[in-house]
Amino acid sequence: MNTEEPTTTAALRSGDRHLAERVQRLCALAGLDLTVVAPGAEPPLHAVLLDDVTEQAGRPWRALGRTVIELGAPGLRLPEDAEQLLGRLVALAAPRRARLVGVVGASGGLGASALAAVLARVAVVAGQTCALVDLDPAGGGLDVLLGIEHDPGPRWADVRAERGGFPPDRLMNALPEWHGARVLSGDVRGGARSTGGSDAVDLDAVAALARAADTVVLDLPRSVLARPGEHDQLTWCDDVVLLAGCTTRAAAAAAAARPVLADHTVHLVVRGPGAGALRPADVADTCRTPLAAVLRPERAFAAGLERGLSPGDQSRGPLLATARRLARVLELGA
Image 1 (cartoon, rainbow, N blue to C red):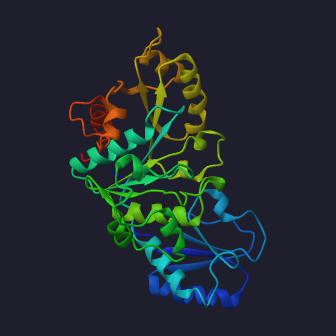
Image 2: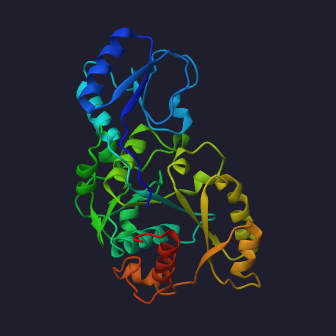
Image 3: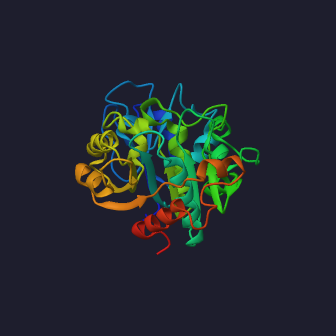
């Protein structure tokens, strides 16, 4: 499990002296030391970042894949949004404790969402506090797969309505619970943002959960594999579980995804064996990635969902067995 020291510094990029004074007072209340840098400057490391977007100089800090608070339209404005800004500063100053594990399918229909859900369920059994986050911008919501769509608690549309920060424990405890894991899901009103991979609300919500949980499992959309460097969601992950099929075309899709994940620790799971001659080890060779686990077909899975079962309910099923193996590989609960 990754741990971090509490963030104690903040950096503001602005040439506005009055704005800097206001931000300085709020940072003091949040326990942060503020450094002000000139417009156009690059951000320092290991700091909470605030960018005055009214001064268009240099590339936007949010394009660098880090959590950034933008000040000025359309971001927060001072002094009217001082309370919201203080809330975000307090949340970001807290230490991160979670291991963030992304799960993504190299091709469609492999059951990546189900695997992500059962991995979160297994992490809870292993003694972890865990959050499961649905990052698909479309679809009906992960909560439908889990059978908790009628349970009370905020979804992405509700979280996005809050302009301020997210106190970690408050967000974690407000989310609906599924077998001990807290679930942040989309619904018919929409899911996580897809522009550039994310927006500030997505970043803040995931960051808050990373400060409240031991493990955060991210159910990643396949779009993160489309273009290298365009999706912030991958930068959040400590580990990525890549789920691949056991056909020639599926192996090619997994091999094409592998360069996008070059900067991550990748755990390859192959769903198979398939009907052809290709074996899971052959898919691993094609991807040049060690085989972490084989996910054998769970024939009664779809029928079980229709009867009200949820992923992992079959105690001897391949899905649960694969998630347990992954948890050992990832050292969740160790």
